[in-house]
Length: 222
Image 1 (tube, rainbow, N blue to C red):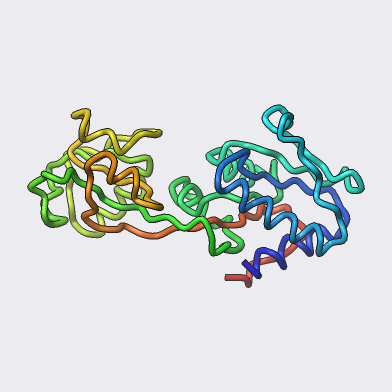
Image 2 (image 1 turned 90 degrees about the vertical axis):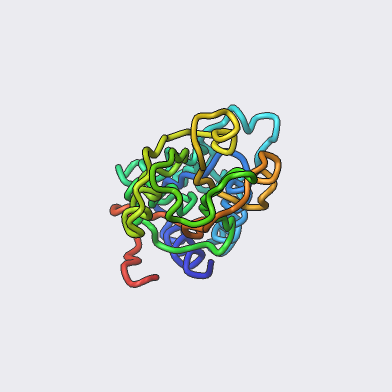
């Protein structure tokens, strides 16, 4: 988190036009606003007040004293692309989104929050016991590239990897897949859909994304 604060605070202190893309709502939105508030305060700029009644309608918000700073509220899946195309100088998104889109090069710092795990999940009554048992099975996931790469490394060959944009946990019960690979935070969705974990592919957290046209050179920051 400290690296992210340092990077963003210094960019804000430059008092030049800056575009920052964050998630419109949800858990990552709260984390993003907390980071932005800290960085704006460090730069001597008041955090813009948001009227909850207008939040769903206002897409771009600027501090009154710093109209050159534009905070855009977008879907998380759009944020990495906005940064990649230079349409946003910074973005805050899930590490999973950046990696799945092949844009991990944009990650300037990890935030150490919004942790989640990509977990292979199977029905509680499934006969699958080991990773090798996935050979020839159908898997549903929102992260087909990450999952495919993982299976390739483990020499596992599923019958197919089916992309689903949401409600992945319902795929086995609905009969469209044998297993799932889905993000897990509390585990309640897995439990409610009669699934159990088989193995964790990898862990993720929220990250600060930095475009190539930003003011700071963060190439040496891990």
